[in-house]
Image (cartoon, rainbow, N blue to C red; front, side, top):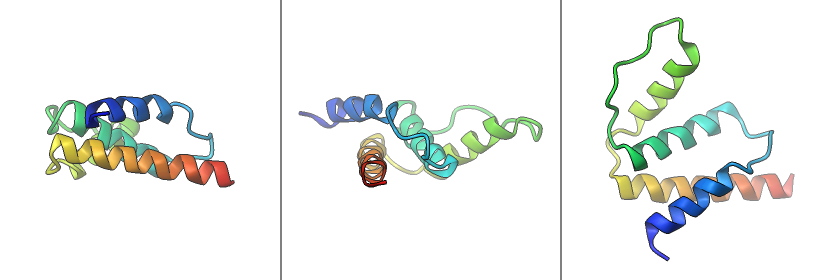
Length: 89
């Protein structure tokens, strides 16, 4: 299985993460997913009153230097960690 197929498999598994997954972890997954599928941030930073959108944008901007392959790999690793943590909880 190639990296892209494995990434798509773990993107589907990410939808089954436990409700106890922290917002911080969800932001990391969001950022890595966007970097892997879109690439570098391609929009302006949301305004101060759009707190949720601004946090997502900031998280994506933080991983901007990663290649799409590196972002896919990191995303897979993070989903695996969160699934294992949820299974042991």
